[in-house]
Image 1 (spheres, rainbow, N blue to C red):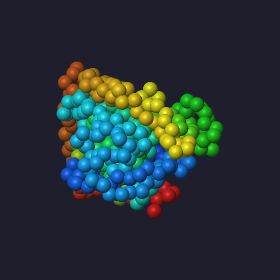
Image 2 (cartoon, rainbow, N blue to C red; image 1 turned 90 degrees about the horizontal axis):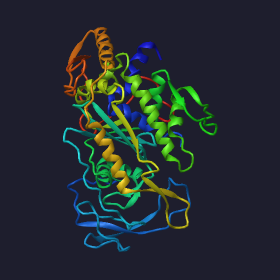
Image 3 (cartoon, helix red, strand yellow; image 1 turned 180 degrees about the horizontal axis):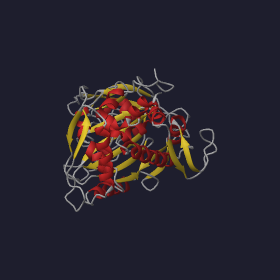
Length: 428
């Protein structure tokens, strides 16, 4: 790939920055239906008899058979109808359905996005093994990222108790939104879905990354030593997707580590200047309901989020879950959430972004780098920033200039994909 192409793609996930910076990394799973919405009719549903799952690994799900039944009935297992205004189950659950978590309290100005990583390449729909909730306070220029294990066993409205990583495959983004609303008290307004190849391609195009490996991994990815390790796309993908048995929590920690490294790379040296080109280059691959024009409006926010300690990282880990073995003489294990502990974690993540803090001089440096990159272009366009938090800071408002583009903003539900470099192995 020549230097010009390398420069264009040095920032390619910037196209999803703030939401997308995180999401490409979501496709870290390479090493290892019907849709419901608020207007869905509830006149008839399907109830099924549970069949013992086959004794396979923890990624496998129980088989089911279906028979039609009126929604005026309750499941055969005599579980209480605790789901309230959400869709009732269509399959008898193997464990009692918990009541929905009450809505998480936060100001209306806080944005909620969900960043997803599929374990398969398009056009196939697989499990979303990477699920990250992103809370953003634009005025205070702060964000919190909450990682959710894919094996978390939750209620999927309209279906049954199941791993959360199956919600998107069962009913698309609306079913996943309802699942997050039921189990976490939040409804994301925007989503990004990336695939393993998207992440691998990104790392290779930015000429690799340097990652500090805290513990050696001799059994994974051909062996990874401890210390500062230079990773290409293949190794980074394996490092972020490898799971040792049931330990999905350690995998989430490594994913968050990679997210930090890549976000730092994308926001340095004026790389955001190529955002319009990069957005177009993903067409057909990364799925999102973010239009180009909306994405451009968040560039100044992304620069401020790149300031020190503006993003908090959380995960639903061992303190918020408990292991549970699926019934039926199988060794398959899942995570049952400790609802109160999960809500406490979410409240902590939200409360963190509600406390204003001054920006540092690093923001001025990043803005200067972006301005310098703009001055090297010939067709400028102007992007006004969102006014930062009203706290003492060296910069209160600013104007950041980006190159214009003839690209048409992508409508809701469209997809974006790489097209200017050779596709990674596994892409059609």
